[in-house]
Length: 230
Image (cartoon, rainbow, N blue to C red; front, side, top):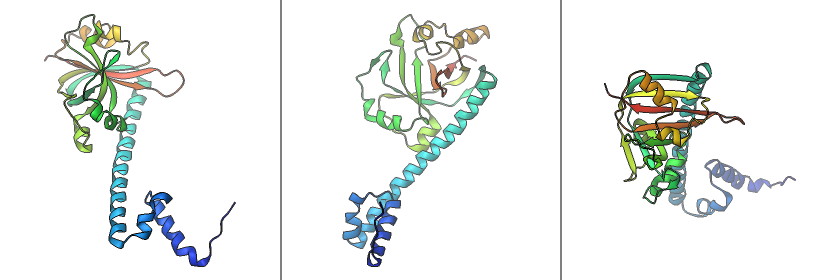
């Protein structure tokens, strides 16, 4: 199953090996081997730019996984917890209205936002003026403002900035039906119940981030961000 090359072919084989390490397939090697020096170096520059972008994205995924892993370990020790803090603004890309996909320009940037998972998150936004009507609930992608700017994640008119200010943040793991839309729209989710029991009053749209734990049982994990009045 081995192929042997003569000594006079060794230089060409080393060129193939070098180009392969740039991520260049055999089919793409023609311009590098047959063109001029300037053309070859220009093509390699383009490949290196692609590699830099890949490295940045991979590093972002690693950093976000480490943050999620720490959050998950906290949930293992304390499945339900809450805090009140000044929450960083998030950007939200709408792509559904309850159970239907929206006919909007979200698809112009949706592929890029999906490619940045888990830096972006599957998320839900619920309008403040809650009624028993799931049209107030939207699924989409969400990302912290600092990460959106750092990685140049694109926005358009379908993307909305959510400036929370002071927020009640409800962390949870293992809650049955933790993402049941009817309970959320009615304000019957444990996040709302805990917020009201503590005497906080909602001051804006609710933002919920969805996470799923690995394994066969797929426990509901996530957090609700609820803007509250001072």
